[in-house]
Length: 383
Image (cartoon, rainbow, N blue to C red; front, side, top):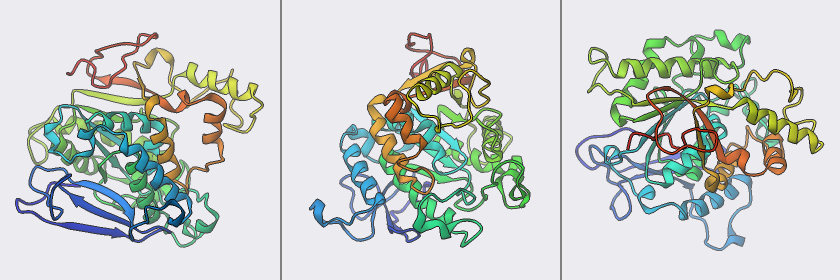
């Protein structure tokens, strides 16, 4: 959502892709009339079924997406008032920008963190680089959306992402360059990596300039993305890393792009500590679970994990696990409720979802630390 003209402009959008139409209403905040948005304001975006639902539970239609909306509604009722109100971006001293490759990546890696800061009144902005068109489809009735059939998965995942953001309480989420500007590249080594429109083939400075525009608009004090390997080597994750780091560099350069320069104070890469992953795998195997992360040896090499000594930060957001799980359920085509991800919570408890780790690569750590000496707040030292 971008700032728009100086005069009030009511906007109402409806996304009809997918089994549940999603109505998007832009408003100035509680009490504002007519859905007005003025210059310098951040629109509040809500996702609701196209037709109002009855307040009586038994009258509501059944289905996984409706269940998510109910759960999200309950989560949002617990949010602090300032997180619910629409505000000028710069009114919030805590401004966090996260850059992810596909819809669902944000929830799996950083969902609890996003929910925690949004609930505390921080301005949280999510930029997603592709629609995730090449993803698998785990919902039997929707397999026709796959890239090798109707190729409609990307449009469907726009709605899934909107619902997930509702669960996390995040009002400001965008696609890099607009929805569909860059296509999902597929896994590394596939022919889909060679499509000219895929994100892997994007011109680095061109894509970085699109992100620069967002950075200069919302002026984040903290930016989060992936490490140089994209976590696990997916080309879109690697490219997200490259584009983000380049955009942060360009945003501070007064000779590049439009708008006032902005220097980001702290940049983090999301991380999964080796010790954390080993412990989790050991406990899973001890419980008799041999299928979750099948083939990974708890005592062997774990290329997806980050050496413990490089992990600088641990955000404890266990109070927001319900929001994260609701957001994961929103990504129904990608995450099976009875699949490995949810098996983790059954075997390891909520901590596996509620504590998220990061590696600080720009700026200085600060504030409180945990028992491992890691800072506990992404904004530590900035307040």
